[in-house]
Image (cartoon, rainbow, N blue to C red):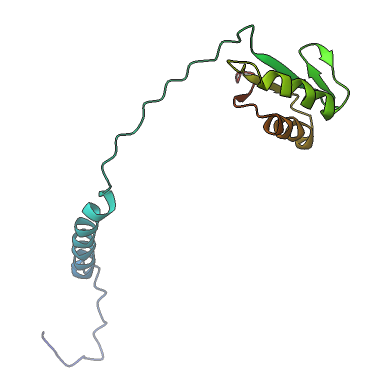
Length: 139
């Protein structure tokens, strides 16, 4: 490094060269860190994952459709039921059938969660094994 005495009549010159040595040093360190951590990050326990088949369920005549409208009223097919006790009585009779039919719940999208949850809980109390929800496909 050359050092000299500054003369009063000379102006300091601006150095317009960027020193890239610190930048290269930091990039090399980051490259080494990433190369060391990638194998650790992608290492996983080998498992065979299931393949998804999205087949829409066919509504069979033996399936029972229970509807809940936006007011919380419960319908067995097209017949209105008078409360959860009437639903429980019918579901207990259905649970005794062999094979047990699937219960499909159609809940209005503006129905309260409590109304649909009450139907699901009643299905559990009656011993129904298969409960499904019917939805409309996205447009």
